[in-house]
Length: 71
Image 1 (spheres, one colour):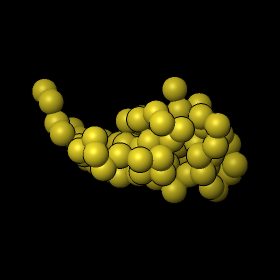
Image 2: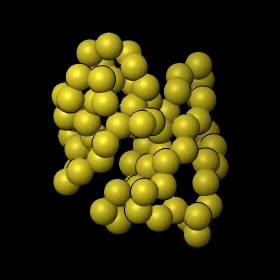
Image 3: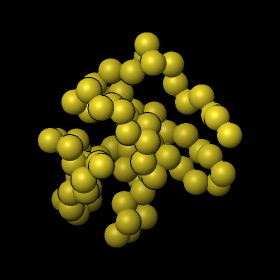
Image 4: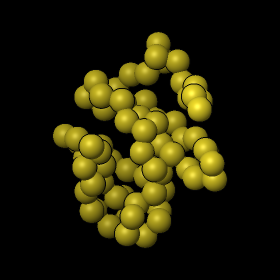
């Protein structure tokens, strides 16, 4: 099933948008020209990723500083 989340013209580095699909929260983001759709939760504490710091292909937990590879 196709679910449109955003228009390509609206995407840019720094873009972040959360979506709820099938009972789960997802984070759509663009960083360094790449678009990612990932589950919106840190696996170690189930905290949301939406406010994490993004740097060099990783997203960093704002609460604990743990970095996760976006790919």
